[in-house]
Image 1 (cartoon, one colour):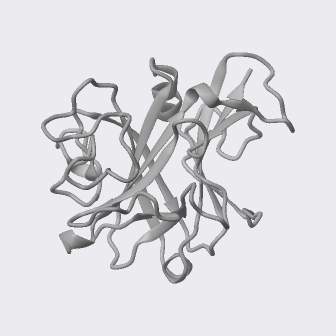
Image 2: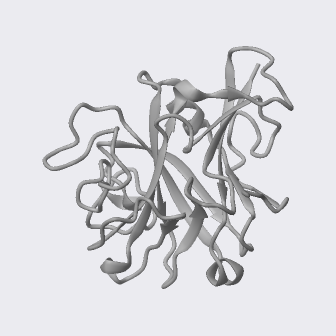
Length: 237
């Protein structure tokens, strides 16, 4: 049975609604055509694991990024706090830490990108409807193959770990050392605007590690039987 330890990390205080604020509606990667996956340099078949792993260091074969797809046609009301209107005032991304030792010992900083809507992302690239079992380092849309992550620089394409022509930078969040089961909440104006501008009711978020460490951070995937899957929540007024 999935569960959450009731510890909350409040991050990126620049959202239209404060991170961690009571939300009115939500959707997870387990709903509808949602999906989540890990991609890693020189590895395949990581899309159906129980965790989403993110890592960046000097060894390119260690690079790992997370992909999250949310089916916005499956947004459902929060029964404990029903929507008060139809206008979205803010959005939040919720992740649950599932990693062990590394999360207890060191801080992690992460970049969040939104995949732009396109019919074609280039030769041999998958589309927005990417399948978990087929998503890999070289075919993942929006991925910058030659970077594991690092600091984002608007003027330098590929920095931060994503192709800037195919993605929108939504912000960064930092997680202090935490135990498994801790919920992390990220919010930014850019995240809310990215969702509001969506036209096909499906969005993909890419998570890359900004700082460097030998070990990966892990967040629960929809396949986890211990923790809740990645979730988008909305404040509606």
